[in-house]
Image 1 (cartoon, rainbow, N blue to C red):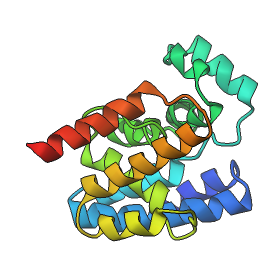
Image 2: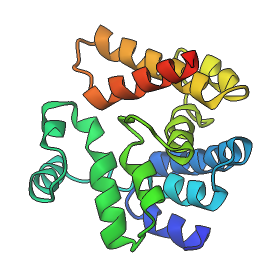
Image 3: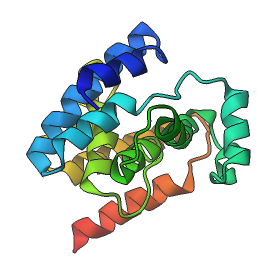
Length: 188
């Protein structure tokens, strides 16, 4: 699917602010894919569709999780996680995207998971560091992204985990697995 068609589909699902974010994620993902050897077209597509379900009704997302074989443990954690796995399912059905690598990058862009591909990591990091993001620690992660994809993601995960802990929120187990996997790989 070409870029303009994909952006047109997504624009109908998003607020103007989120659409601008999506365009920033797309540009960042293409740059990171080029830098770290991921497929640029797949990075572009995954980035465009990464927040496809972001504004779906929470009851609709809950029903999809319950009825479509998605991990039910998602329902025990913050609903901000839901749009990624639900989005991957809806992108496949509604936008007719069948590429498993693209769908996985969408599926795991909020939680991460063990053994993520380079494309998965590119989308995860692009979502975190796109130019419209402004929060404590993002500049350090942007700088690290210039030298190492994994080091930048480790720092992003540390920031996220600490933020959630300070808010007394539960942390999805796949996020810890993602973090541990990257830290252990750095030691090898």
